[in-house]
Image (cartoon, rainbow over the protein chains, first blue to last red):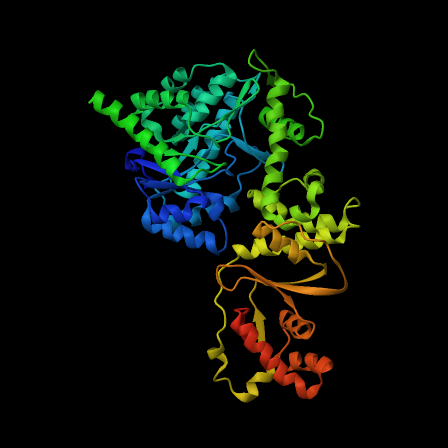
Length: 284
Length: 259
């Protein structure tokens, strides 16, 4: 890794933000309200020109941005897609995001892209594999990345570690940071029958750089991470526990489908801000 | 092969299979059985690709109607996505519809897919300046013969044997499904993006020889010769001058050079 790569302490605290979605372009420019920063989906702007890049310029002038990708396939066993990484690096040079993130998962194999965030078996083999790839990605991008925990519905007989042990070990050995999706912790805890508090307790506070808050739906016995609904009370409660453990962490609402009017997301963001302020003031 | 890769190959095969098989490495528990768990991914794979393709092909969705889902499932089964961006999975849909046994008889489907895809790719194609009329104002008279007028790089001239553009327009406006009309004589549609908004319009029969010539890189003199075959020698130059004014005015020409 390059000596000039920023350490976690160099990355700023951004406050409370939103995932940028097309439906809110006009409304966010007209009235950003208390939105302090935006997360863009990197792939939406890996295009040659036209309206997407024009909007990106406008938001870049108004807000701190972070880049969040879905295609790195850091746990994949096909070779890393260097063309993709180079496009990502070029976009990052232009956007100058506060940081770049993707998911702790694999998205395809043998050249076929499944376009899903597939979970890994939590084995020493997978850990060694992922750590090596994270290091190579960080070298290629010239920056430390954040990896997000995904919601999952399957588990593997060969897993030797818990999910949080695996995530913490990846972050430690690869020297990367963590984007903690609180909703995904809740969903996976329900689906796999573990304690979400054990999960939080197992993560290193020094590597938590960002929180996602989102909604989900019930799909039979399983919770399904749809990111298409308001944050539920249980996730708000887990968010409080996360703030209690990790303190001031840049927090955002991530809504991917059934996009509501911006005012609804403003209200959720205000709620997150209120919960964090109340807790941290009481602790001070 | 590593155990990790072997597991990924098994799981990917299971997700893509029409009938979901059992994957030995998965574990069920008291919350849900392994089959119910795998089914979330099996269902999600098709649902995500269908949703992405529906976004890129609104005209085709309207035209195909209730058969749209089956059409997409056939395509997804025959052509797995190979690109990191799910949107680009649509690149092969028109060719698939033109050749797949189940769909090739309905030629309007492939035509519709080509129009939707031309609009989709023009939307975020590389920005390009357009040639203004003033740039031709001081051209020496003897230079005109070898002048070439290059349309914008992303522009396309599509041949249609049906009213596919009516379906796209209706889809964009949220109008009701138009009646499909198969044309006795093929017509052409020009798709281009002069600034930020994608445009498409019918190409008149009188314009077509010159427009196709411009796409092929013909010189101004050659474009006039093509028009002369249709309109006569005397009418060709004024007609070409009129077309040139139209093309420049609508922001179609992206580059000039000399042969």
